[in-house]
Image 1 (tube, rainbow, N blue to C red):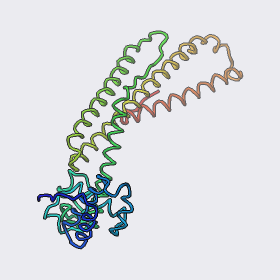
Image 2 (cartoon, rainbow, N blue to C red):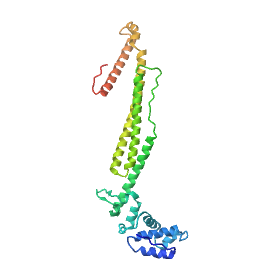
Image 3 (cartoon, rainbow, N blue to C red):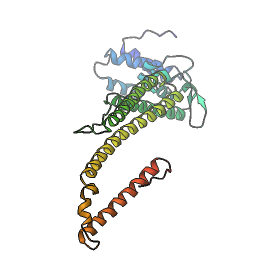
Image 4 (tube, rainbow, N blue to C red):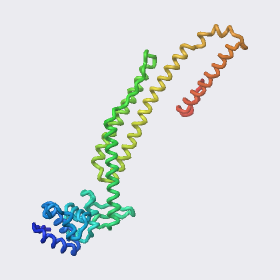
Length: 292
């Protein structure tokens, strides 16, 4: 549709606006064009608000007319729509305006075929989806910049199992790094499919699972450090408090001696510790009985 050249005469523009206000359809575009022309060329000499009063139009209504004129083409396919419907379509992202949208009742329509209520629902849904994508990108950016966590276990001397400890730590560190790389790859895929809701949900789920696995690896790495630290302390206690070091002293005691009762009490504590450790190992190994 060819656009008509606009006059620079304010009286002529005022008359034309009032005329188009009485014409349905494309009049909305033409009113918007003329309002833009008046404002951009300062034909009302800085008194655009006052000018709107002369044509009986509120500023908010004028802004809607101008947005429709700027955002939408003046075509016959849109000429039947109301001002409110046109404004809602103009408020929808440009790439979504001609794309079929699924409504809450299961119907699929293009925006130009929707009612005002359906357009409001669609606008709200698209805005929510845009927010979710923005939040997801922000979260992924934070994860991408997060350095893989390495659990350091202080070892003053090299025990017999030091090599195994280091292997476990290196394995978990590499697994953590692989998860970070996987999240980066999924983020790149997300950028390709963010317009398709099904692909978006699928990749979003994959990212969530990858993040969960990454956190699990971090917790496992911390657990490995804690366990080896505990084992080192236990070995130290056993080395320093072996009963065989005090065998001769124990044999000098009578059964009724308080010192002997103290040793018996320590034995009961060790038996409880062994039993509890056996229960934990039994649970981890799937039911295998550990004899202390």
